[in-house]
Image (cartoon, rainbow, N blue to C red):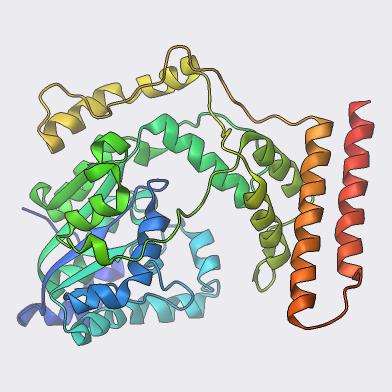
Length: 401
């Protein structure tokens, strides 16, 4: 049986959702998709957003979420992790940095989500936010999610995708660099949510083991080897032929572009006073257009050593949550002859990437001028962009002499 723990001031919070306990729920079920990070979550969320009307036609509701976050429900992690100090970057992204704005959000969010679901007229709701698995690290925090959604439906199920830990960490590093990180790649220590057994036990304690849908993020373990098909079949939506399929989101950078961007980050902040630095985002967009498929990959020995610390818990997950007596969770393992593809960058490669960026920017400006029916000219922004990269490439050349 799932449990509910009420701690601190949340024990007496009078929210709209909690006041509905004496009323019949208005949904048959709620599916809560909690990630993990780097398991195609953005692709799934965008797919649900672009198919929102199609889903609604068949009784499935994918709520809008907070302003500027219509494709995923960042509010769930923000609300449940309140005062834990684990979500400062999420608060910044959501524009809730001031104490007043955050307190207003905490008071209104449960009522907002309950009201939207009540008005939907559907039988099933889907909520999705990968930060629920990576930012909520206690049973008490997970229980807060249950407090919001449990009164709204007769059944609440949690969907979680697991990815082999070495592959997940490698992909996570790429995202970190794209978010402004400047550190070199290494296998981390002490990341609690990489222990899948502990993670699943916490969610099972709150929602019930029978209400967990554990999926494996490997092509051979996905239905029809397809993530969208696998996810939508899990929620019982089978009209795959009618789905609009977005392209894969959050494309991984190759090891050269990744190293270029890591060094670029040291000289260009991703942040701005009003939020994200738009110019910095355009650089990332340009790099995405020129990246190859030669992505970062640690050598087999390092990957196997990292995975060894999770061997026992992964086997227990396979037995306990997937009923696999052999204890095999992931079908693939690092190949013994796997050659390392670590981040690297020489001067010639750096200049080639800089030139590609400049050409991308020139093409973008020409397209904009064509749209405005203006004669082409070399703008100050173009000159600044070009000179900036030439200067930095000169410094790279000098440092390698």
